Length: 321
Length: 260
Image (cartoon, rainbow over the protein chains, first blue to last red):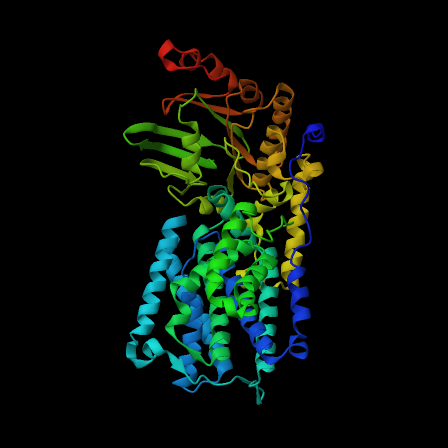
């Protein structure tokens, strides 16, 4: 019977390729940024690293989980606020706030996943927008006098490691860059581990996946928790980089941007998401005079990509299990 | 000896239509059993109830004597019950290998964080499951197409890939929903051999089938249903000569097309 396969035309050429090489390579080159560029560029690179982590965390839920999360700024915000509050109000060192930021954001993700996972596609999207609105309103209304209202929280401390203060922009850049490296490693492992596979099965055919023993509820909860936790991590770095947090950084349009970065870059594709992040957060810095047009330019780019490359600028590759 | 799988008075209705009514049947361990009946008799619905895709309104489904009625599909899978689909449901964007590897999901013991850390133990487990996948691909003569996109294959091979995906976890019971549909004569003859081989590897088989050649050749026990009710059961010769079966299949004019 295997004779049939010889005569059968196979439409797409074999697209199995080593994926995920571009991410680590880009990362290694990036380590040299403080040696080559001036401090304003180092700051831009640091912000890129933070938003890359944030976008990759959105990709966990949107690209890999296939769940339309348009409230991702919530988890980013939880991480940033947890660090800001614990540091300024309770005097925790920055690095001590990091696990709390990750865990609380992940817990929020897992908790919200409960009611959300029943919803599909556009319904899920609208519900996550709702959560984002609630989050921003809550932060603005300053419950218990801890979030600082619309002005947010200022005076967030400098992280220090083994008595070494990471005060300079270069030091902070390296911190962000190393954390980005760790996240890239996690994403590579996610591609290869059983959770990542289960995500792909569910995304393609939920019923077939269930009859193979995939527990959709469990996988989706883990996906939300993982994506939210990584966003919380990015939030801590963000609070440190800006030394201030305010509700304006976590509004709905930020979630839309993250969503768009993943869709335009290529859902499920690490190089694609990094490329999308660079376009969205770095290119506007280059054309600083036109920065206010970034949504205009990005809007046109989004339309062009969706028409010309619906799989994203750098699509996900087929990969071996 | 208690049956591997037993249905007791199972019934389900969809919007007032009684799709399956008071159906009882038992499948013995190590048998090849078949559920047959004309189009629309409710066969696939019975499969869907066994595999947890839909929940019966009445009756009980027992697995090795234990009530499993209404368990979620992934829990049914964990018991060792796997199925194929009448309308093939392969993962479209994946290779044949990856599709079959998907059947190993419950064999992977890793916790999510262990997988994320990529520890050596996880890599060893992964290598073992890859080997297991290759074994099944070889057994079902699919190793030559392992790297092809699954949906680019001819229909008959796609059905075999689905079978491999169901078998790779070494289930106790595999349920094949019309495995001969769309196969030519040579292919369905080969299918009979495949089904025997599955049984001989220690897996009980339940199939829904229109192809009477396949059914008559391979089965130990046949249950015939029509309009959701059991009208006959027994071995191939008993069922073939049963007047109710003949009537159901050759039928009166208002009963629609005969199925074989």
